[in-house]
Image 1 (cartoon, rainbow, N blue to C red):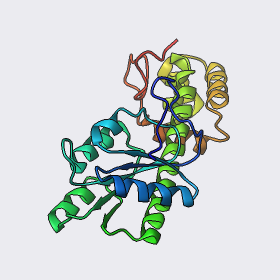
Image 2: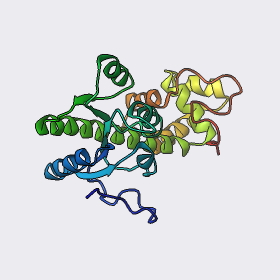
Image 3: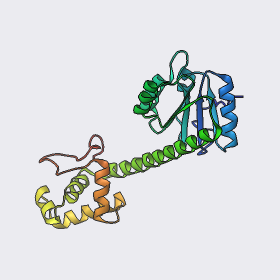
Amino acid sequence: MASRYPSESGVTSATGTMPIVFVVDDDVSVRESLELLIVSAGWHPETFPSAQEFLGRPRVQAPSCLLLDVAMPGLNGLELQKRVAVERPDMPIIFITGHGDVPMTVQAMKAGAVEFLTKPLRDDVVVDAVASALERSRLALDHESQMTALRDRYASLSRREREVMALVVAGLLNKQVGGELGISEITVKAHRGRVMQKMKAASLPDLVTMSTQLGILGLPEAGSQAVGPAQAGLGR
């Protein structure tokens, strides 16, 4: 009864942007009951009897969360949590267990679990926890998408445009930027205009905000050829 993904199709998500709820539990009755609950709530379930099988599932580009049993043979829930935190940071984890104790709960929550539910599970509690986790996942994916687009726009800047951008957001006037870079004020204005256009910045404060998000802080060092965390390989 478990929902499976196409193992050889290369398709990351067969359901597009429909939220996906993953269930990893070695108890088949738990998997089946949670699958029915997830479907009734309007989400897409995928169930796995082991952590190893779940890790074989490609990362999805859709809101998702993981209902994870703690005590399983082989790779247990806490160990899988560590892997997910590194490989799928946008996927919230809800632990489910019949063997939970205080130290285990504290360890799981400190490692980033959003909920820790004990069996027998109440349907309304599970649904509320999953809904909250899926919203967290959606927000994380939206932020990741926005940052990818922002980095791509920054990568489109030439070396000189990145130098001008760094000096402008540091508060220097066009004349001062020209003095720092050894170019005319008119040339600075031209570069600045292209920076605003390429970065899709509506104003200087908007550009400053983008620079903060990219981690571009302070003035470029003398003789530097690029500015910010995206220096390597982005110059033209």
